[in-house]
Image (cartoon, rainbow, N blue to C red; front, side, top):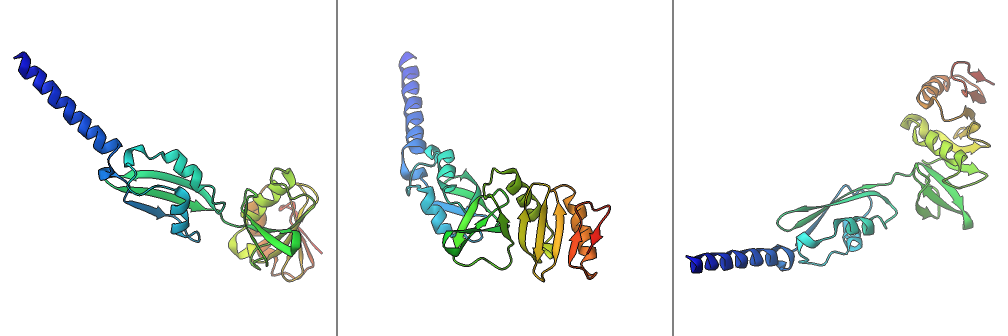
Length: 221
């Protein structure tokens, strides 16, 4: 009986050991496919390269947090999540940063920034669809820039396409220059949706300046 128990114990240990080897060390359950989802402009091959996962690396020992950290080294990406899909696929879900404005930089170039002020890329020519920020300080931590980015990123598409430049002397003193030369005095970042609705309804009326800093009492000049 003791011999039989010992044999069963040894057999169990062997099975457990073999299973552990297959899962944690063997290429049998290694990464054979890296699936990328959510990317729109960043090539999947670039994300795979940044993930730096060796072919057939055991799935169970892939450091998912480290993979995500490496992928976020691509500044066009806002989020990254890595997950295992057994038996052999590592799935990487990403979301890209969306440019909301342009910041002029040295050499006449244009830095595209997202709603947090993160520089996504630098181009030789600014896209005409994005407003150019004309601020005294271009610091994402500055309250003025934060307020401007909040306003710009919250504009409805129909209105955002009309904004050419954005100026602000303070967080409460934001104004727009429209594509047709008209000026909008926006004020602070509060009541953004209400201000946008009021402005859209007013743009059909001829004026040079639309002051909607207080949407309850608007002024046209």
